Length: 332
Image (tube, rainbow, N blue to C red; front, side):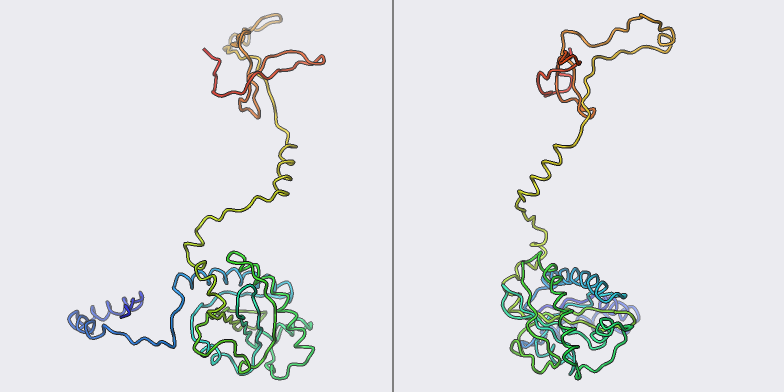
């Protein structure tokens, strides 16, 4: 038996119906008793939890930002890409939803098994092509008539974008994506069995004045080895990082070159304003520092060492006696 969780909208509708008199509580209880069993379609097996779906959404939100920056630079125009939805559906349903003629990029993602598909709406694809050829980014739906030059230009553009996919996934696993095929007819694309569960990530895409969808299809076989890493528990774990010896050495060298202020306080005294105004030549001010106690050496105004004054190469100097382990340790 599968329990059904009501959405907030459904709860609001029920409360509204009860308050308006369209439905009373007794009828609602009777309906609940009658609907204890819900039909489950094994062809639409849910193999990913909501938590794992959210993990995939986080990855592709980052991917969408990276693609936005990449295509903006390549096409030199306004580009906005954002995640619209992340769903798990049978592969057959994904193929049926794809237009008869579209742009399909097939990627291998070693070391993971299987392949991923990126489907680009013809409006978006031809807007990209028009910008690459120096146009304003207008779209012409003639995918079935792609020339060899057009095919080469578009495949090269999406091949360059591979680095963004690699960067977006590196928080989970280091992959080596390769554009294996470029296709325009989804009927020739049979990667997995029709009933196999796939993740479909839909990206709202705007390029110039044209808008459309980019859909990414990820079969279950690709994600199976890393499913455990998609949960929130994995994302919140602290991941220890190995120290980079070269970076550590450079940081150490740079810190050692930083200049700090070293000051030795010979002593202090307090006088009032009247005494200060009456000071004359050869007057003596008694300091609070005993000649039998060491002086304090401060580094950037923080006491660090006990020292004794002296002379070194005809210059006043201070010889370090010991570290300060407690503030005012030598005071009575």
